[in-house]
Amino acid sequence: MSTLSAHDIEVRLGGKPVVAGVAATFQSGTVTAILGPNGAGKSTLLACLAGLRKPNAGHVRLDETDVLSMHARARARRIGFIPQTPEVAWAVEARILVGLGRTPFIGSSGLSLEDAAAIDRAMEAAGVAELADRDVTTLSGGERGRVLIARALAGDPEWLLADEPLTGLDPGHQLDAGDLFRAMAHEQGRGVIVTLHDLSLAARIADRIIVMAAGKVLADGPPGEALSPEVMARAYGVRARVIEGAGGPLIEIVGRGG
Amino acid sequence: MSRRQTTIIALVALTVLLSMVSMAAGRVWVPFSDWLDRGDPRWAIIFELRLPRTILAIGVGAALGMSGAAMQGYTRNPLADPGALGVSSMAALGAVLTLYLGAGAAEPWVIAAAAMIGALIAVMLLLALSGQASSIVTFILAGVILQTMAGAGVALALSLAPNPWAVNEIINWLMGSLADRSLGEVQMALPLIAAGCVMLMFIGRGLDALTLGETGARSLGVNMTATRWILAIGVALTAGASVAVTGVIGFVGLIVPHLLRPLVGARPGGLLIPSAIGGAVLVLAADIAVRLTPAAGEVKLGVAMAVLGGPFFFALLLSLRRRIA
Image (cartoon, rainbow over all chains, first blue to last red; front, side, top):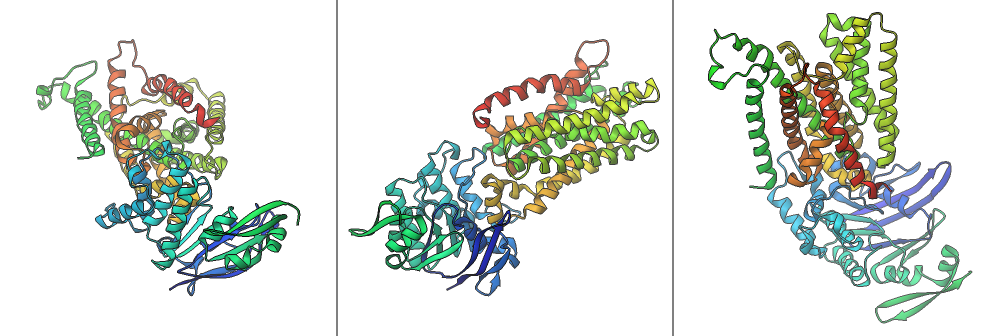
């Protein structure tokens, strides 16, 4: 059981506040989705939580330790991170890319048998085992997205923080990835925090939803509570309706206006 | 055995073979059977002229090949190369300034130090000018600016040179050559090149992780500040020491990693050692070719590489057009 907590995080970019005082505590074993309109500060908050950005004020603690004071390698072993627009610079095979997830564990002798086993498990779990020998630059956006999820899994992190990991995946693979995140949290006891844009998908995947707007937390709670029509109106400026669907609540956007 | 290992073994075998040819070939052919006869006047040719030349070709080739591969890995840009992006020119400017001031004639290490400082300044400027983004366009523009600055500095030194002899010396040296180098120069350059190569190999894992971009690499626990500094100093040592003893020999670091990528894989850390050996092979082969060219005087190695490398650079840029647009 571990806890990742944000204490009054503030981030300013060019004088403009992007994250304006966010406090939240995350428990392992749950899937949290962070939602909000473009520019709400979701990605910036996630980068702070991952220890990759120093907030102008406030701090992030993993259990009792400030994430910024942790040794980079030690932090990387515990917190896996998937950036929003994942870059793949070279035409390497998918298996080599997934293997990069082992970077915080690799010594001078290169990949061990243990590393190889972790890579195989991660590719199996993310459903990309059959892509192992494919050149990553020839994969479709969705396939590449799944390979990058496998890359993060390969490090076997206690926490997985992913910035829009489901963008570009088809509905089937979105569900698969969602199930994978839930299994990671509920069965393996990891903490999963993802930013998403699809409200219904978030309601289906997440145990807890945080809605952000203008750098602040607007709502925080289980999907049924956080995704109320009032919150949708304030966050996105849309009229929304919550429908009880067969697979969970569906959020229908009726139109513009609050 | 993996394809990478096979390639490395083949490259090592090629290096050994070309070293033998390099010792034997030239205006005077010395067959292997005559090498050990100390009384033979050709013994001096082999061990006092061709041995330093051969060792330097291997060392300089390895330095340029590896620093090219490391720069490409760090910048995630297949067009990065100490020669093409002005690092070698800045090193040359440093060296020219010492020649011009007359200090170089007395102390060879002064030239080397000045060349390495020039190279270090160039790498730091290059990384600063191209910023965080690994855009190919900004990177090439940064290289063009450096080349122009270094060229202007050298031109200024030439136009203000006190006598034609100095001008002649500087121009000759700028063209890049391995001819008439002594064991003293070998002793000065090799340790610096070796130290630089070790530093660059040390950041191999970081370069691998950079395949995922800078944020990706940092999330994997790679210390980017340390990686950047080690790269800058490693390139300054390898490229600077090479330029100090041979003048500017361009395109080695551009051509070699590009040719080896299909053979050993594109993983940047895995390309470092093959690129070093490949660089040695390329420079050895080019130097032998230059010696055997039937011309009144010997064609300068740097000129030959530029004649070869220019069109290669052009073709590479054409093949990358889609990525740039």
